[in-house]
Image (cartoon, rainbow, N blue to C red; front, side, top):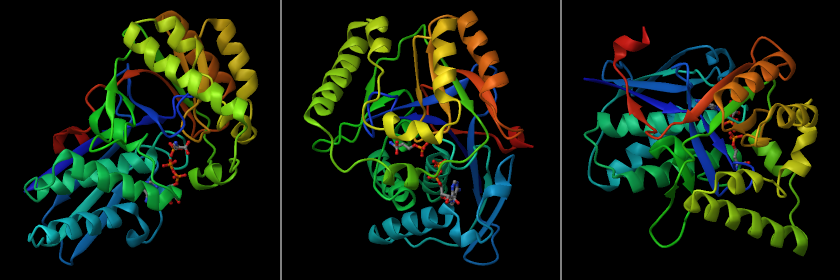
Length: 321
Ligand SMILES: Nc1ncnc2c1ncn2[C@@H]1O[C@H](COP(=O)(O)OP(=O)(O)O)[C@@H](O)[C@H]1O
Ligand SMILES: N[C@@H](CCOP(=O)(O)O)C(=O)O
């Protein structure tokens, strides 16, 4: 018995919704921009983990320091509470997303791992139980629970973190004409550190502005007013404090807006930058600009993406080799 699950990259915050909005990404060239986790029962000990993939060399050397071990412990604990005892597992992580990139790298590993383990053990946890566990595991890494990566990564689409009553998240309408350019420059920004530099308190003016922008964004998506939605993708909470961590961000934004991008922002805690375009030619020009001017080393990459409406997905093991 073996299971393999893919979980896509995501943009946390979407500029205007710090910790409250997120979107899953799918490159238009068909490449897999997300981690894959395999689970099978061939382990000799209780837990075995191996890794491969472009960014596997950046993972902690000790498998027990890998978040996948915590995923295993988390699923095991939940199943024990349901009276289900689990046997040993072997896991393999295809680490395709760079760590500390702003692409929801830890979320992608967590979502793929929890979903794969749950399936492997016969799917005893429902979606809500899995998502809550994913949020807790993400909180262990970044210092506080935020669902804006794990939720879109798990269920796809643009997600609003409802977190009210029993509802963790709600799907917002995605503007069909939008292309999302995403450029990772190849350097690392730790999410925990990028959260720690944010102020404890904000001014009354910032709070009012933030509420106005976020409310307008949600309203505009439902009204089908894409231009209004793009025009309010302004981050008054994190970007003013985080942009110093992203070399070349301001210059890139200026050029991308000149090329015709509708909005430019920091993806998650950075250093990945995203740009929204409503025309494929403009998106390709922005992509070419970013590839030439925003990337800082060979680890960087740039993609033109659509929203991944599916989220987590099973993959055939044969597709991975
Ligand atoms: N499977 C994993 N994927 C990503 N990060 C992991 C994983 N396992 C452990 N980690 C650790 O978690 C931290 C993730 O850092 P973070 O800045 O939150 O990355 P990201 O923003 O890309 O999710 C790093 O210290 C990394 O070593
Ligand atoms: N809302 C979070 C999102 C972090 O995303 P990541 O991809 O950088 O992990 C934040 O802005 O701190």
